[in-house]
Image 1 (cartoon, helix red, strand yellow):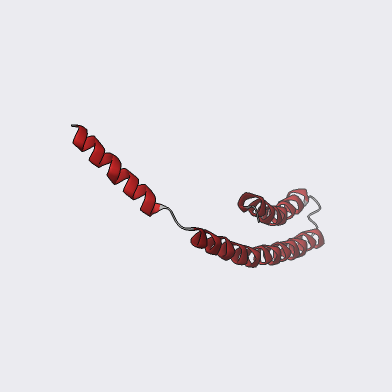
Image 2 (cartoon, one colour):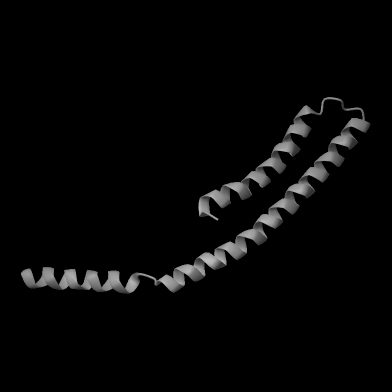
Length: 97
């Protein structure tokens, strides 16, 4: 019984030692994350700008059509663009970049 426990403990230790990535791999992963993040953040800014422009055109069209109760449309487009912008800030805080 003692031999089985010892063998099991040695197998677990062997798995734990071989499963850990090295420092070089962790630095490479961080570098990849940083380079990818800034591309994604620029993409988020472009998407937020496009949402803002589409929202402005949509609200203007409704206003010109005589629909003067456009509060829901204005807030919907505004908060959609704000969400996209804040998601970039949230990801920056989450990953510590």
